[in-house]
Image 1 (cartoon, rainbow, N blue to C red):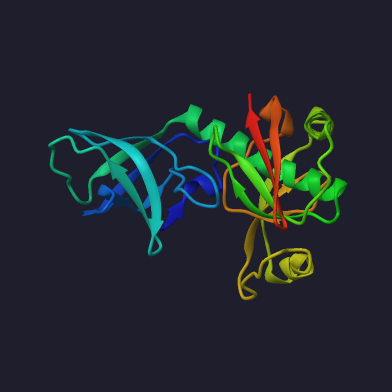
Image 2 (cartoon, helix red, strand yellow):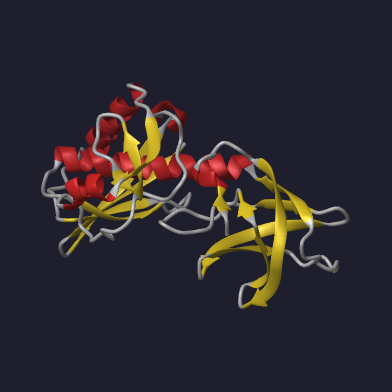
Length: 238
């Protein structure tokens, strides 16, 4: 895979590519391209969906995964033969991409606000699937009766300031300065892509994001649960 185009162009939904190979595995029939707009499921974010248009066929993409450094685009079989080295047009479903970007950025925002308000919490996991999204923290807090309202108001207040959201790449040296504040180890011999919400520290992330926080619109805190030494904050983007 020569280019993961969504990293640099998260708001580009149509592009050209070439089929390098195709195959079948336990998920179904897949295509591997020389470059891709499609986000492969990972990092808590669902895969993109859409279509790949060839000269005499249209392949509906229902799942995308990165396996052994190659991005596999899983297609609905349509009875037509796949031609290697064919030039194709990629079309990502923009509504799904934008919704997933909202949920992903919202997860980072919740983590940042919670860690700021409750220093004993450290975000360790994010699951940003619509309808089941949550952020999990190492550490616990006292959950007062008005927690959902008060924490939700704090998050919505930050959204109202319309902070800029940027993704960029930091050098190993720059990432080393952040390493002590991370709950996991990072490879020290390579640069890392980060998500940076204005006003908060950058965090390593390979997902897609909105341009500004107001693009999220309304973020609803649904519930907060404690189990052993972990806290989960569940949310929805409306």
